[in-house]
Amino acid sequence: MSRGPNTRLNDLFGLAGWSKGELARLVNRQAAAMGHHQLATDTSRVRRWIDMGESPREPVPSVLAALFTERLGRVVTIEDLGFARPGRTSRRQPGGAKDNPDGLPWAPERTAAVLTEFTGMDLMLNRRGLMGAGAALTAGSAISGHMHDWLHTDPALSMDAPRFNDPLHADPAGYDRYEAAPIGSQEIEALERSVEVFRAWDASRGGGLQRKAVVGQLNEVGGMLAYRHPEHLQRRLWGVAANLAVLAGWMSHDVGLEPTAQKYFIIAAHAAREGGDRPRAGEALSRAARQMVHLGKPHEALDLMKLAQSGSGERTLPRTRAMLHTVEAWAQAAMGRGQAMRRTLGEAEDLFVSDKNDVPPPSWMQHFDDADMHGMQALAYRTLADHDPSAAPVAKRHALEALRLRGTGYQRSQIFDYLSMASACFIADDPEQADRYARLALVSMGETSSHRTWDRLREMYRLTGQYAGYGRIDDLREEIRLALPKSPTRKARPAEV
Image (tube, rainbow, N blue to C red):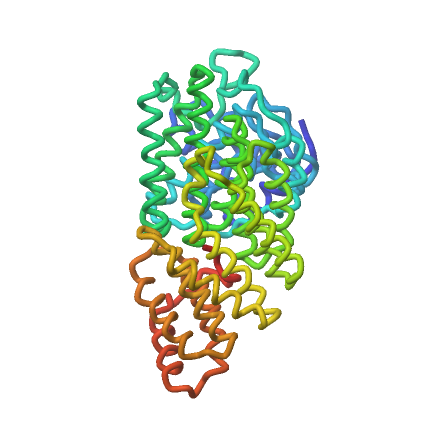
């Protein structure tokens, strides 16, 4: 059925640089390698896909996704190509549905399919030494607009696994059928413990060293979700998927793979909601909001935070709500809205101290303690100080308290505290103290694999310019120039703790 030109496929086709005949030959060759020897694609068929919006049947969309992923060096999904998945009514509008390219929100069986496909593509890029780049971030307003009603309702688990051997529900592309087998509570407990190990490693050393392992574990969980387990186990498995997807997203963000990170945050929100954990879904979206502030898009972050806070539901604990407020405050600070930021941080403090710990916090909130609370306050005030220098002394006070309270195993957060302190000192005209904390950060940064720490260091380096000619600061500037990676991955706002 013709729907008009498929502009999404056409755009990717132009980036890839193939001719239509070359793409047809590549499809046939790749399909044959996958065991589909009967496929015979030609130039005219490729033309119909691009110019007339014709949607090919499987395995062609999966083959095309793999080909474009390898060619462009970033994950390209079936939706990215402008195609609908099997068994799903297409909502693609003319021009490739640019307002909602991912077709948000997803049904449960599609969440598992997207999870499995996306992680598989990501692992393929890792194996071949490629880095994801070139894709555009989806606007926070678009995400919140399409997911609002969906997140505000609780799911039924009757559809939370793909249906096999059902003619009305086609087997989604990308599933490893041999993985569709039952697992028990012991296996899920082992997966939950692995999440804690990965989370601790990320907090200590940054996202670069264990990202592939997390993505691989998430891919395995996607296969497990292809089997319909008893409801209590299925919920826990969705929870593991959500936690791993947040980690995969955070690690991807930490090393500069921004579109990849955003996709994982969206996957995490879907997985958490399918597991009945709306607070976890809200926290996942707050990660996407932090990413937006870091990339200089605070307006988009506020749109995401409205969804995260309203969609988290009444079961959200006060400490979780406090954390969400600190992210909102950081976005407000980036926009120079000092009064709104202070009001929001005040609400965050009230919520934080009101949490009596009578209800055990979920595993994903156990790391948000007093040190993190002060660290986020320091970051918000330091960010506001770019607009209002009088905020710098307050940033210093919170940064010092965060450093005093910061426990072992949180080296990356400690680096951010050092840099918040150094930046606030420069703004407050205290170069000697700034020099001290900047050097403490430099000593630690070589032991982590976090691009965000380097982004933050570049922001602090900008502040040293006003002290050119000051002996120690000139030495510091030279040390920073020598330490910074030669090819910055991006220009960014100050990174978060």
